[in-house]
Image: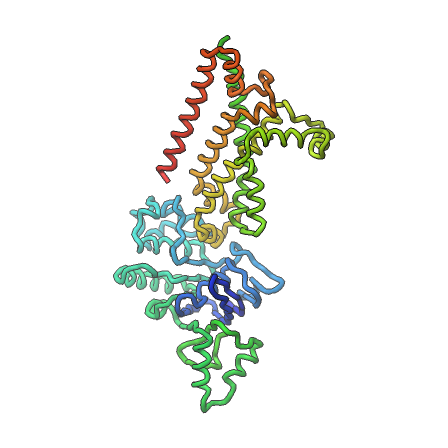
Length: 254
Length: 218
């Protein structure tokens, strides 16, 4: 049950080709954070889960439904995934209330959401008339109004000053507790993930990871590598996702 | 001779129909070429836009040749009972080919400016591509649409070479205001010619004024 992701994707930029491989599970109601440097493929992972980027191979499964494999493709608007974009992507020609109402699910109380975001006085304002923190709140409330089954957050607190960020974090934390959100969030800041997620993974460059494994494998048995191969995924050069806190390669998320 | 309103009405009808046709045809084309950046796009786009860089007489000449019964398009049209040269319908088709690219360029520029994540955000709020197009893309392209409508309409209204080649000067059918003006000058009826010219100048001024206002707003 929950979300299962096993994917490979080769990113081609003008200067280099970056092969990525991901393996990830997310149970219903879990809140997982993925940390990694810019350019490590975090955003690509979220966009593949949302259906905005087509992976090269692998599988994405949500509960019993296969969203992607070699025979299946579920379009983004049928996935019930909410993605909050790095730059909010608020509709500039719609007011705050219209933005939130745009994708609101049946029975969603938009007035309550406006109240929760302290946006009642801003309901008729357009996005360009809002501050960074307000835009952030509208973007989150718009996504929540859709009542997605999984919420994906892509560096949601980027470009905010520290004071606004702290206030927003505690507000978002309360909302997540209240709504029992299933969350996958990427960020390059550990503090944000710490306060919102129950588990944190890391995206690391495989070359650095190999060195780390070799060090950790010293004096241990060689299951370290076996674990990867028995999953049927051979180590590819590029970026892998693995679990941080335990730092045990057996629990590697490739 | 007095001022005749019929050529003005012919021009207005022509401009209106060409603009509507161009809007309907170019909207999906422009959107498609913005979304799908295939290698064929440039070739296809050049083919579509080439009428803008051709002298109207050259374009008119080849359109006429195409419609002649000696070639396939003309034969096919004839078989369906259509004869386009020297008819109002022929003018509409030819002017859409000649001036529709103005609409295409304006729409394409406007569509390309829309941030890709707005489209994605709408999909991820459960809306399909068609609904997203009508509720997000079109309202955000309002200025581009108005600008495309105005430029296509004004260019059609002011066309002379192509209209003369394709339609000749049949009263109440293909005699547009530009042709009527030309004929009055030929007959040295300058007073009437001035009136026709004044109408064209007035409409053009209004159009250009609105366009510059739109540019300032954006």
